[in-house]
Image (cartoon, rainbow, N blue to C red; front, side):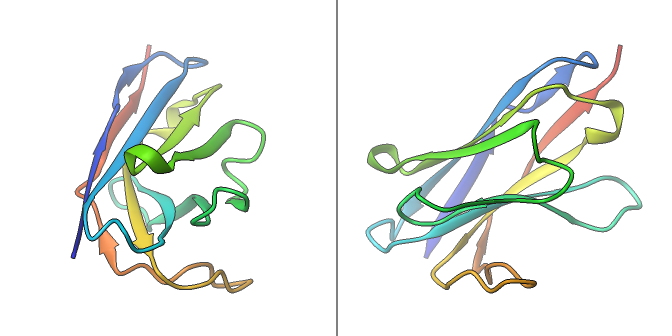
Length: 124
């Protein structure tokens, strides 16, 4: 079992930045890829970004390209999502998932573990 806890969400003004964290505990000796997703009320879940277990391969959804950066700190079992240029439409619950699988083009990773999410609100 892997337990994921997200943090770093909050209220930010349009154009501002936030850095989200996702910390893994439990069976963290296994090599995991991690992904970030978001879901706004009444909306479908959207893929934001993913990173492989080495940190060498990163994948971004169209909504994140040029504004968001995913990274990981293997020593601390933590994955980050740096978000800049935030817009009101970026407001959502952001969740991370962990995967032991491989990236499949068109499908992404298959995630076996999820965190509870952290709320991001973008408003003036």
